[in-house]
Amino acid sequence: VRRYKGPNRILARWNVSLDAILSQRGPELFARELTSDFKMIKEHAEAWAVDVQSEFFLNSMLSAVEQCKHDINRCQYLFTEILPWQLWEDTTFKKIISGLILNDFYNRTSIKEVLQKFVLSDSRLGDPRLPRNRRNWIAVTTEAKERFIQWLSREDIGFFFEHVLPDRRDPHERKSFWLRYVPKLKASRPLLCSEDETRLRTQLRDKVKVGHFGKIRGNSAFILDFGQVKAVEFSQVGACYIYTEGEFNEIVPDFWSSKTFTAEGLKDKNRCIIDGRIIHVITKNVDWRRDVATVLARYGVRP
Image 1: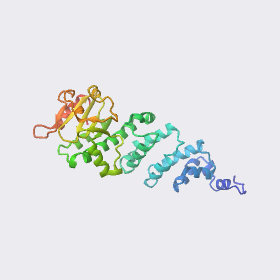
Image 2 (image 1 turned 45 degrees about the vertical axis):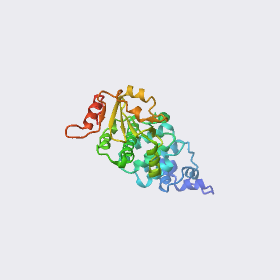
Image 3 (image 1 turned 60 degrees about the vertical axis):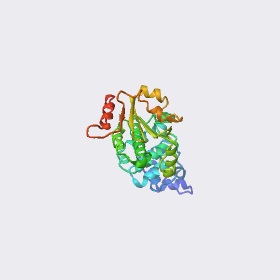
Image 4 (image 1 turned 60 degrees about the horizontal axis):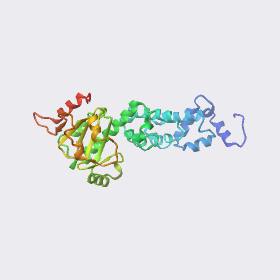
């Protein structure tokens, strides 16, 4: 290659940057040129006549991920060009996603929102709480999946108590109480009445996606799934309803059903755990938060 003086542009390119092709650091150097100018993957591979299905190219893509994932300026490129690459081997792709979700850099910066949006929109992943996407998450680590669900649940709780409640009033401090339990949630689902859904779509437009939300007749509600025990809150202050898993499944056979729920059906005090219908009251001697925490603790659910 060094001795070549002919007209072939590929060999001429190799001659100038031979280390990027034939040295041990080849994949790293090759990836650096790819990411430095935010190039298109296909065009970069063709310019160097490198097979995108080769082990060399895969190692270059892995290096590109490492070069981009902690760089604020390159993160957008990571999520628009590198990760959407359709030739990632499935387990490799899921391993990368697991690492990003568990990386503290994404937990403490706004890039978390970019990562979350990418995961939810990518057909290889999607919302892990939805039955149709569960197979997609098999190769993602349990810890990463649980953290991602916590992100979504925290967002759902914030959305419900900040936007669905009338005038955003929360005099009984329900939002702050339930946020303490986010790490224990297996799933959560807001249920919107037609009036609230119409109002929120108009007010928020594309700011909040409501694709996983359910429909309900009566007041809007919020279901919190802790596994062995489920809790239901409503937009109108009244009471929190707590059920065992078995009793709740009798009321709601399909947590993700597209059918319309009813407020009356979710307010079945006869099926609640004993003292599981707890009135929202905070006084000197009575505090609904203490009573709910006591019931949840019986089933091992503690903040």
